[in-house]
Length: 137
Image (cartoon, rainbow, N blue to C red):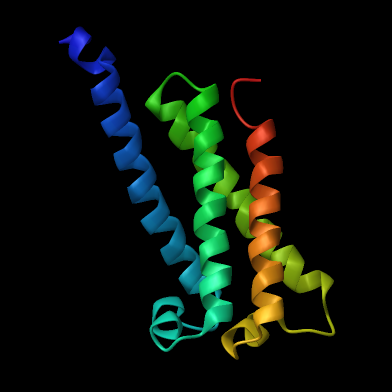
């Protein structure tokens, strides 16, 4: 049975499944944190929310990519992926705090594409920084 778990196809399927589940859970947490309903706003054509949400999805994927690359076990990958997500979430909160003249959450919810784009780029940029420093160091 040990050979089964060491098969590259099985490992890939396991990592893939974990990343999909993690992405769903982490997006649900982001949904709870934001004042707007992501998927409803996207359905209504709010491009700012789509960009911000896309940045979060891409950011989560980048973090998990590095967690997979630098860790041999599934549990380590999950741990580092979760830690990376927490840092991404913290980055989102800091972004809101560092811009007191702009209510980031409200602007994105109201469809401000410029703020949505900046949110996307912050998520992706932070994910590369987080990913470069997590796991397997």
